Image 1 (cartoon, rainbow, N blue to C red):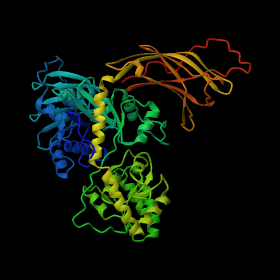
Image 2: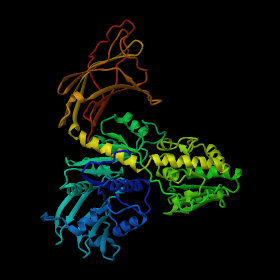
Image 3: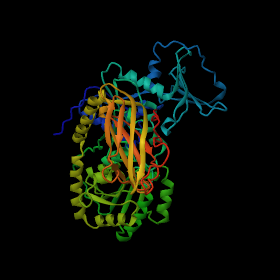
Image 4: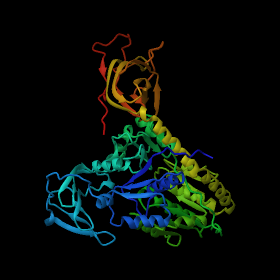
Length: 608
C-alpha cells in the first residue's frame, strides 16, 4: 500500500468562491481536501470572494458529498464581519459619505443587511460597503472583479463599529495575505494550496517562513498551436513569473511540467501530482449498458468544442439510427449548440440536459463518453466515466487524455479536430457490446490504479520534499553577464566565453548548487538543442563560462537559432538571449573592435 503519511501542519486551500455548480477545478480542490481528511488532516477551504448565501452554499455542498465533516470552509468576508478588526486604532481618515451615489442594497440569506453598492461618477470601479447584521459598515472596497483577473489595486478601508476608519490596504492582496498570516499563526507550518491562476497574483509572494505556498495548475497555460513556446495569456504570465516564489508548482501531467520547464527552466520546486478518481461501488442493480447511448459532461463553453461532438453524431446517426447523445452541463453556448442541433436535424438524437448533480450516474448505462475539448489540464470527467466502466472516446489533446487512456484498451484517442475518426470510434463501440464490455472492465481497472491511495502517496512525497527543500530556497536579486567572446566561426560554430555575476540569498544553498545551461532554440519548430558549456565556480558570486573549442572551433549552431543562456539555482531561474557577432572571414582574422559584449536581457529578472 502506498505511503500516505502527510507532514504535520495546517492545510489551507484558497479559492475566490466555492459554487454549487462547481466546475472541474473546484471539484478537484474539494476532492483533494476530502482525501486529506482520509489521511488524518483537518483542512480548511479559504474563500476570498463574497457571497450573501455563504452558509447555505456550504450546507448544500455537504449534502451533495462535495464537502465532508472535517473540512472547514472559511470566508474572509464573514470572518471580519463577525470578528471585526481587533484592537486597531482609528487612522484619522473619515469614511466618505457616498449616500448620494447609492444604487443598490442587498440582504444576506437570513434577510439581514449585507452590501450596499455605489457608483461614483468618474471612478473606474463601483464601490461596495459590506455590512454587519446591524447595518453598519465594516469594509469599503472597490468592485474589482478579482475572479476575472483584476490586479485589485485601490483603496480598501477597514471600518470599526463606531464608523471610524481603523486601517487601509492599497490592494486586495494585502488584505488576503494578512488574513492568511493570521490563520497560520500558532502553527509551526502551514501548507497554502492555490488552485486558481487568478488568486496567485494576490497571494504570491507571501513573506513568512511558516507558510509553504503550493500552486496547482489545472488547465492549459499556452495558446495555439499549444507548443511549449506558444503565447501565454496574461493570467498565466502572472503565474509563471511567480514560480520562483512558490514552494511547489504542481502540474497534473509530466508533459505540462516539461513544457513549463522548457519555457522558464526546470527548478527544484516543480512537481507532478495527477488528480485521482474515487472508484464508486457498482450499483446493487447494475443497469445494462444501452448500446445506443452516448454521454458528455461538460460546460457549454468554447473550450469544450461541443459543436464537434454534434457534427460527429450526425455521422453516428447515419450508421446507427437509434443512437442518442445526452449532453449534461450549462454555459454561454447553450443557444448556439441548440441551433446547431436543429440545423443538423438531430433533435431526436442529441439532447442538452442542462446541469444535473446526478449526471454521473448516467455513465453506468452509457456505451461511450465523448471528450472534444480543444485543451484540458487533466479532465476529471474522463476519469469519472472510466470509474463507472464507460469507455471514453477523446481527442488526443494537451493535457490529460493520453495520460489517462490507453488507446484501444480502455478507450480511444483520435487526432484533435478529426470529427470523422471520432464518429467512427463511437460507431465501433455502439455496434459491438462485446467491445464495450471489454473496455468497460479495463476502464474500471485503470481508474482503480488512479485512486486516492496513490494520490495521497504522491502528495505526501511532494510536501515532504517541500519541507526538506525550504532551507535551500533561493532568491536571485541581480545577475550581470559580461561576455568576453561571443561569435561564430566558419561552419556556424559558436565561440562563447563570459563571466556571470550573481547576487542572491539563501539560508543554506550556495552558488555551487547552481546550474548553467546554453541552448539553441529553433524559432520555427521550437526544437531545443543543448550546447556544451564549461562552468567554473570562481567565487561566492561568480561563474566563469566557456564553450569547449575542440579541434573544429566550438559547437555547431543553426544559422537562425536563438541562443539561450539559463541559470537555475534551486527554485530560482534567470535567462538571457545571446546574439553572437558575424562569422569570421575566410582568412580567420579577427574583426576589428571590442569583442566584449553584454548579453541582451542580462539585466536583473523582474520580480513580483
